[in-house]
Length: 504
Image 1 (cartoon, rainbow, N blue to C red):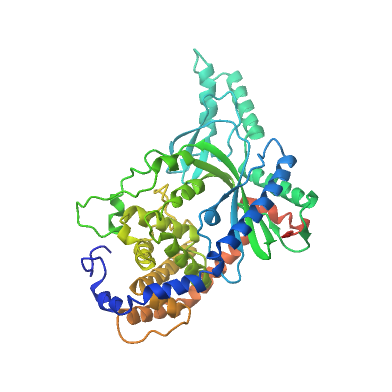
Image 2: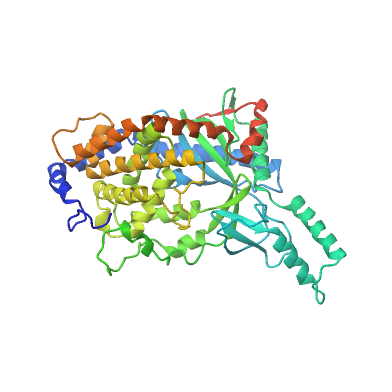
C-alpha cells in the first residue's frame, strides 16, 4: 500500500484535485456531524457525568452486597473501565449507554509468567491453584491471551524439590501425585465457577437489597460478564460485571521496544527514516499492570486499565484522535454492523487508534478531525487488506485470525473485504462518504469517489446473500457461546432478568 500512486504528502494523486474542492467545507461539516450523529449527550458533559456517577453508585451498592454474599471470594470493589472510563463512548439512537466494570476477587497466590506457548500442551489448565506452599509462586504460561498452568509439570516439580536422593518414583510418590491432583481440583480458582458465583450473588443482591426492581428483563448471565439492564436518570444503560484477578502478572518489558519492521507498510516513509516514538508515559502504563478476567474456562489477560492510562494523554498535543475515533465507532455501529454483522468491533477500532498513534506520532497527523480520520483510515484499510489487526499489547495475536468452520471463515473474509471497500471510499472523501451514508446529499460528477462508490455498491449487491447468511450464523451462536452460557441456559427458569430503576 505504501508508496503506490501517491504524492509526496502520502495522498493518492488522483484524489488531490477532488480534496481541494471541498477541503474548506469539511471541518464545518464534520463539526455538524459530531453534534448531530455522534449524539448530543457526548457534548453534554454535565449530564454524562451525572449518569456515570449514578451508575457507579448503583454498582457500588450491588458489589457491597456481593461481598457480603461471599466475603472470602469477592472484594466488593468495582472498577470502571472501557469506553466510559476512557471518554470514548458513543451510542446509536436506540441503544443504551454501556458501562464495563472489573469485579476483583481475592487471590493471594503469586503467579510467575514463564513465557508463551505457541501450541496447546497436553496438560495445561485454566484453573489457578491456591497453594501457600508454592514459593515464590505458581509458574504460568501465556497461550494467546489465556493464562494456563501445566499441572503435571507443576506437581512433578514440587515433588522432586522434596526428594533429595532418589529420583525414581515410588508407590508413595505416585500416591502423593494423585493426592496433589485431587487437591488442585478442590482448591483451584476456576473462572467458570467464579462467574457462576458472581451471577448468583448479584441475583441475591438484587433480590434482597434496597434497590427498586421492575418485573421485566434486566440481568443476563452471558459469559464473559454478568450483564445488567437499568434505567438511570431516565436513560437506558447496560452494565457488565467481569470477575477479575488484579496485579498478578507484570507487563512485558519488551512491549514498547518491540520490533515493528514487520509493520513497515503501515506508514509512508523513505527507507532508513528514523521512526519517532509516541509521547505517552511508558512507566505509568507499566505501573498500571495487567489483570486477569474470567472468560469461559480460562483466565485471560486484560489491558483495560493500561489502555485507560494510555488514553489519558493521547491528545495532549491538541490533536483530534478521540473525536475521529468516535466518528468511526458511530459509523461502525449505525451502518457497518447493521449491514454486515459484527466483525469490526469498537475494541478493534481502539487498537487501530493505538497503532496509528504509535506509527504516526507527529502532531500534524492529528491536528484536525479530518487529519485524524485520514490517519486512522490509512491503518484500518491496510489492516483489512492484509487480514491482520494485531493486539497493541500482544502483537502476536491477530484479531482477524479466526479459527472457525471453513464456511464461516469464507463468509467473514467477504465481510472484511467489503469493509475494506467502505474504508477506502471513506478515505477518498470523508465528507462525501458521511453524506452518502446518512442520505444527506447525493454524490455528483465524475471522479475517483464516484468510481469507488460504484465498485462498493456492485460488491454489496453481488454478496448480499452472503452477508445475510453470515449475520444469521453470528446470531445463532450468540445464545450458546462458551461453557458458561450452557450452564446459564439451564437456569433461565429462574427468570431471564431483572430491570433496575435508579430514582433521581
